[in-house]
Image (tube, rainbow, N blue to C red; front, top):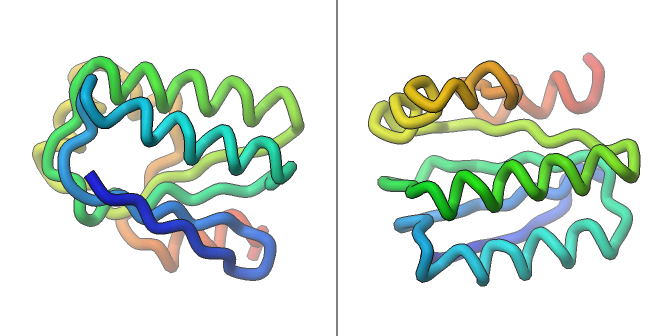
Length: 113
């Protein structure tokens, strides 16, 4: 798994690629901690390069979302592959997370436009 973090007008964009599994979740958690420590309130998780996510990865996302809400933050997701989207649907996490087809759509919503 690879993670690239960039900023777009106050929105942290976290581009994730590869597999998010029990082996890679600690690295993801480390990135999430950095975002929280920086008091970033708006986060977009770009999943365009993610081809698989397991329960550990899903748990990391849930924990991150909870921790972000504590500081009045919000997390959006974009670019889920059909396979990853299916996992979110099966686990009903698509009802919890704000998921958009494109990064552009997600950013418009994060900026409130």
